[in-house]
Amino acid sequence: MAKTILLVEDEAAIREMIESALAHAGFNPLPAADAAEAERVMKQTRPDLILLDWMLPGVSGIELARRLRRDISTRELPIIMLTARCEEPDRVSGLEAGVDDYVGKPFSVRELIARIQAVLRRTAPRSETGPMEIEGLILDPSSHRVTAEGTPIKVGPTEFRMLRFFMGNRERVFTRSQLLDNVWGDNVYVEERTVDVHIRRLRKALAPFGYDKLVQTVHGTGYRFSTQTDS
Ligand code: CA
Image (tube, rainbow, N blue to C red; front, side, top):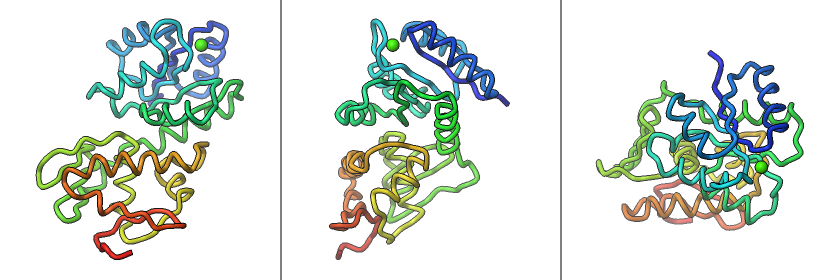
């Protein structure tokens, strides 16, 4: 079935160009000119992914991304930001808002389609995988829930994927670059230091239950998920 892509872009010429490229690539595009229209469209149809322009009149793309992440019904929705702002602080604030990837303007249609496919692949639910458990910490891939001794733990979408990867690959040390490949995907152009941002967020989410100590820094190398405290 064709994946539905909500495209939020205020510049009509760019919007129409992307819309026809998406349709040509076999997607079902839903165009919107601003955040308000995007929210109206989402009340009718749930998209599989959102292509979101950063600079929009009224509510900005980044603010819309934050709203979507706060709402339980849209917090797992993959978001790719279209942006001419490629500076690191903006990328970090975007990642902190829960954005899955960036495509910088100007971009090639081929690159855009490849990035959409990569994000859809890595955010696809793996329902065949059963719950994973480590010392009372349970991650259920099918329900996207994390619990500690039965108490739900709130984690963002990236932290969820990171924790799932760690729980499936315990006791091994991974470099930031390996974590980027495995948690974000191969075709993602994010700085290695953004791994640290998400490690911090994951630890913060786990800290009230004492599981933050499982996410261990291996100095000069990267990170390891381990029940052993000696490093
Ligand atoms: Ca714009």
